[in-house]
Length: 242
Ligand code: NDP
Figure: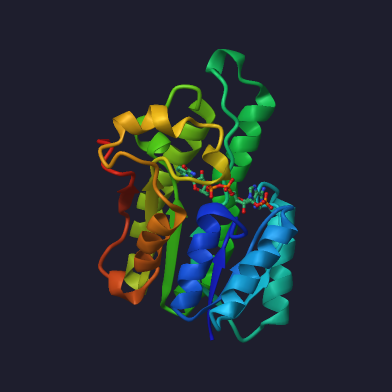
């Protein structure tokens, strides 16, 4: 049984990625923070497709919570390893820098970048030992071009882009690839406060994207078909020039 972990897999882009990986015959570990109902719904969708998965609640913004959950899983599954890791969980706490509170900076850093350090450090070990692995980080247009009101979010996502490129060079020889997908404006809970009618004027394709459109690219990068692609950042943004 091949195993994949999707952080923030309960809804939005993460849910679409869970479904894509289930379709690729992965047993999917569905991480979330507090939205258990949505996570259960996602698992039910996986099972309806004839796939398998399990819920793995932990707080990606807290090192101890990550380490406890992963050690518990490894202890219960000593013969197995997680060969695909999708670092997708993320939050926005927008404010102009001048007014940004410490908490808005720290929460976004802990959830969107520090999390990836702690989770990937643990999982990469087994990928290297087994000489196969795929890491896909979900970053953002904001981390490539910077967006006003998102100094915290842009910094975190740009940092993850740097991590992606550096780690890819560390682990390439062991058949482990590390890539990132940078969505533009995608219809999920995270963007429900944004006005699509106003923003679509600057999107060449003329609309917000769907979570499934992001998941297709993540699925490809997570597959063995993408074996010669590593350290890449692929935009899925309807043609916004970056
Ligand atoms: P949603 O807000 O729809 O979903 C966020 C997911 O992350 C939920 O499953 C949520 O679980 C989980 N999550 C949040 N905080 C934590 C935490 N501390 N620990 C564990 N899980 C957590 O977001 P999207 O699907 O829109 O975004 C997914 C990724 O895509 C993010 O990294 C985001 O930055 C990125 N992105 C999104 C874009 C968009 O337009 N939507 C554009 C560019 C990038 P729970 O419900 O339990 O809190």
